[in-house]
Structure formats: structure tokens, C-alpha cells
Length: 184
Image (cartoon, rainbow, N blue to C red; front, side, top):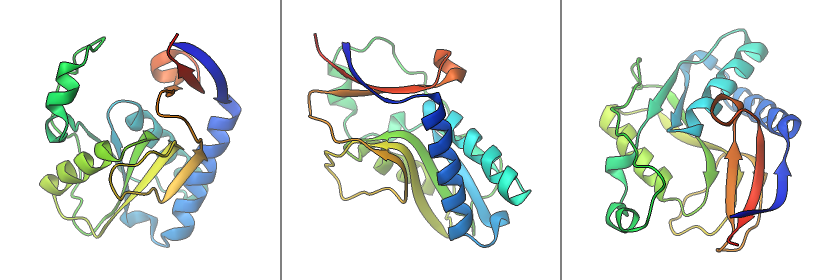
């Protein structure tokens, strides 16, 4: 893959997350009933950043949790047949709080086909029954295969099907940025 375009730098990622945090607090008058659940891997780090931003706004940090949706994907056989650089290690959900009666915001880095989000909703319902489930993504690139749309978006980035969005976060990659890549 080669980099085609830089979509967001570190400042733009920070500003987008701060804006999403403001949107979440505006929509939910009682921040004590909001929880953020990150979809492994980058969604987890984004949810922690959003929780810190909400705490800076409201003075109350929402609880955060982690979902691993590997076993919930409806395209496991297709993905297993494709060459993968690394095999994911399946982990149980790490949600150390009751989600019943909570407004859960699922957090992910990129929304593409919608299949990851559908799998995350299935995994979440296995944990409990929240009052509502919303979706926050850093990037919405379109090309949906399922009728899923985000409630909170950092940036809409129209792409072709052959392009790839890469989100890099300092916690994993040593820097914050979003780039469009395409095959060589």
C-alpha cells in the first residue's frame, strides 16, 4: 500500500474527538447514564480519549469498556480465507459495569460496510440491555452494506472501494493521523 492522501493530522484528530465529546454531552443531559464501549483495537483508545474529553467538559468521566467482536462477525470465513498480516487474539468483553439502563456509545475508528458495528451490537446485547446504543466513529468512509449510520462522526471521507483508510493512534502507532492508502 502506498499513501495517497493525508486526511487528518494529530491536531485534527484531537479537535474531532473534542467535538464528538461535546455532541455526546449535548445529547445526554445526565452524563452519569452514558458509557463508552470501544471496539478493539483502535476504538478502545478513542473511547478512552472521548471519556477524558467528556470529563473535562462535565467533570464526570463516563465508564469505558472494550468489545472484541471477532466471534460475532458474519464474514469470518471470508476474512479467514484472505491473507492476514496477523491473527487476532480473541478476548472476552471487558465491560466492568452494568450496561442495563445506560446509554452506550459504541466507538470505532472507521465505519465502512457496517459489519463490524452489527457484530458489536450483537456482542453488546450478550452483555446486557442498554437503554440505547449509539455509534461514534472517527472516520465514515461510506460503502455501507448494512443500514447502519453513525450518530457522531469526526470526518466523512468519500473513498473508492479499492482505497483503504488507515488510522494511526499514538498509543499503538506512535503518532496520530488518518491517511488514505491504495494498492501499489
